[in-house]
Length: 101
Image 1 (cartoon, one colour):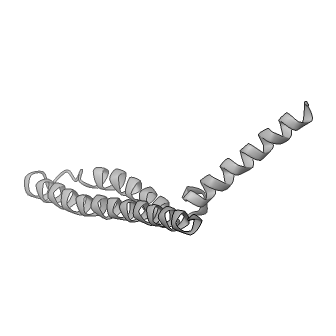
Image 2 (cartoon, one colour):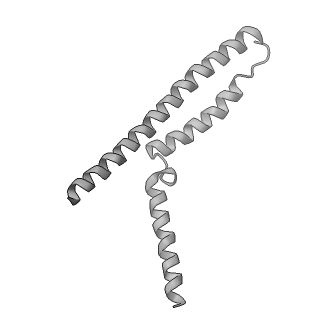
Image 3 (cartoon, one colour):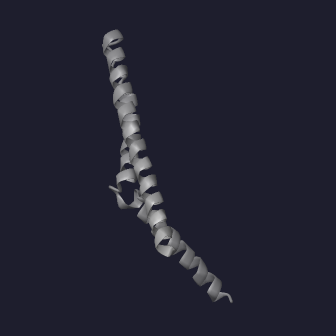
């Protein structure tokens, strides 16, 4: 019975991971389409004043951080770091409780 439960948990974790990756790629496609459209509008109607790079930069930074979290590129953005930090804080709290008992 425990094996089935572990297998189900692994399946749910994999399903969640696929959903996160799919969300990132959806964001990436939206970024490419919208920024391309904004670039076209800018260059066609106001080529003397370039402004398309501001939304490209802002959204691009957000997309970069999204990639860091989804693909665990930087350790402190990933799920492993969060779980380790939660366990660490819980252990510290337990030690503090034990001190005063």
